[in-house]
Image (tube, rainbow, N blue to C red; front, side, top):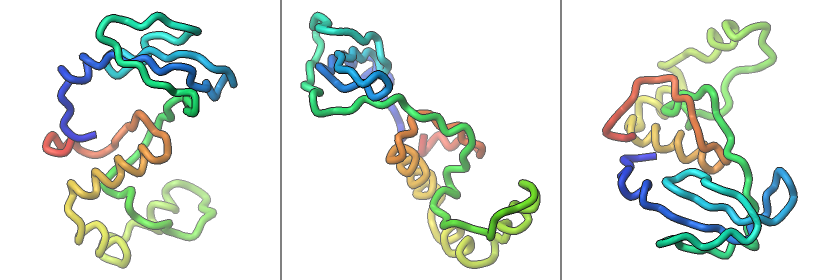
Length: 141
């Protein structure tokens, strides 16, 4: 999220010691390079210029993928009255941009704030990848 300095991300060299892998229910070391997992194993050797963190109390979960999101609308409360017979019926029911609460939340909150809100909401839920289905905003991303 936000403007990323890809040089600093690429430079990250991290070894997490003894994290619990949730999907296998075992302890393992996790090597991170450039923001990505570069290795998982037992007693991995410490690499050159690598920071080591004790992760014995950490639970390592796979990142979730949100395949469809409209980040600036993620702050809206539950809308509509399901069940609906189709997506079209749902869209017809909730698409009321000049009605409460959409009017106040969407039109009264800066777009950049709504984009950050949607991003943080995904991160808190464990999402590491979002397919954002609205225009790209370079000043925020």
